[in-house]
Image 1 (cartoon, rainbow, N blue to C red):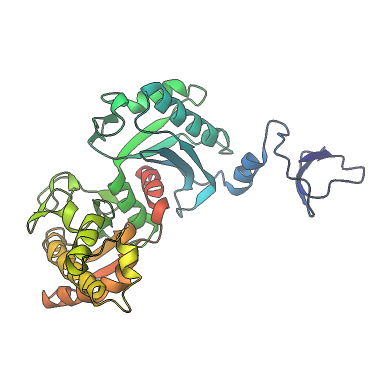
Image 2 (cartoon, rainbow, N blue to C red; image 1 turned 60 degrees about the vertical axis):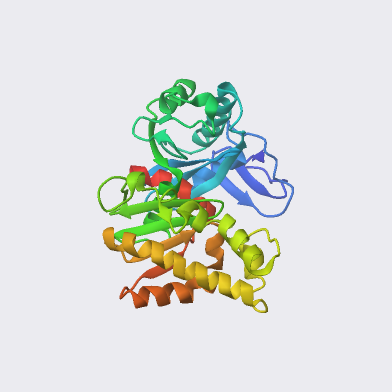
Length: 346
């Protein structure tokens, strides 16, 4: 990036340039990609300024994982991510100071580059967690921040951004909110979202809100620990079941659903496995679709990528039960939780 004089020829060969009149111009060519700040602005920040409309409403969506934090500024009108998401690595086993420093640095970077004042931050966390108060009660992850008020702690570290407002949501609930607000279930009044991978996550969404209490949902809106057949849901619809069932059928060890799905054309055991999976998933979801008065199911997680394979037995089972259910795969994928967390401010 260079400062060019409007009265003199510009010898820069390309990139964003700020002229003396402080107008921002684009010059074609190459060689002008310096990340050198001009008037305190860098290319990343300029991209935010160009993209953001001060008449719109924005919020930051944050997805907290066991090895990183990823955040993004979200346009709450259309669910578009403004600029680039920011990712910072930090392991959940780290001391509290390391964890909060990483989270603070991540948010400071995003907020400072937002282009205009963005003070609403939605954060998606795994549980156990007090989502109303913003306090983690996890012991298996982030043990060092157990019992700490996260919003208060981050606000104290981000005093250069006064007036921050924090809201918190379960990570699976955030995924469900993202898909219902901006993704596969956009425009659907009531939807159940399941994430199928190393475990089973769930979100019940009605009129844009996560439902965690009441007779129409399981306790906390969580299905992973519900009984199913000989075990629980987390064992019945996760990668563990796929791997275990395939070994029962063939004696061979596989890594997960993707590997089994790649054998579908020539492997009878693979076809049988996904047929069973579809019927079992219908058996489990039918009572909850009826209780929650929903006819839309969205599936995310690694196993959902095999949805085209088990869709037929799944729908056949719904039909046999007299239900018409719209089943969709996630379209937001790893962005769903961030967008869902931001949507808490809609």
